[in-house]
Length: 171
Image 1: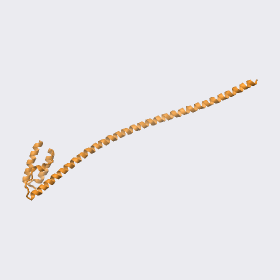
Image 2: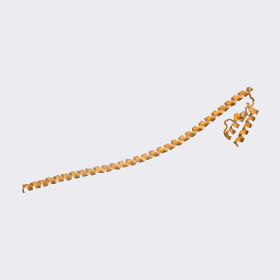
Image 3: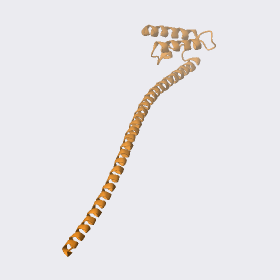
Image 4: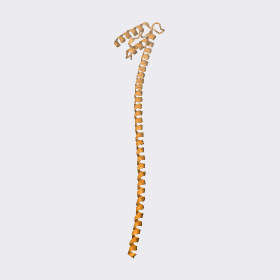
């Protein structure tokens, strides 16, 4: 064999070796890329699962927050209502206190000769409904009935007269 043939054969062998090495390297890179792709797909699926779980948790928390807000609003309305009732009761107690203070001052003055009969209008001041009128009337009868120790017939007549006038207004 001639030297050129030997050289061509060596070149062909080295080319084949190089080609084989390149094919092996390419196959190795292909396997690495395939493995990386599998890992990326697995990570993507895991990420999608986490994303779905996050959205589910988010939805649950939003629903819970909305329910808590509704409950808070409901409790707030109840508290506002109760506060209004309390303010009304406080005002009514203040009016009754003023009324009884006025009655006591009037009685104290009448005992010492300034006036013998109390006018009926002062007993029913602050009365704004038929139920309140009836309750006040019953309480006054218990206090001013002539059979009681501090009872007074003329004051009771004034109370009865005023009660009848107011009762006619509410009917």
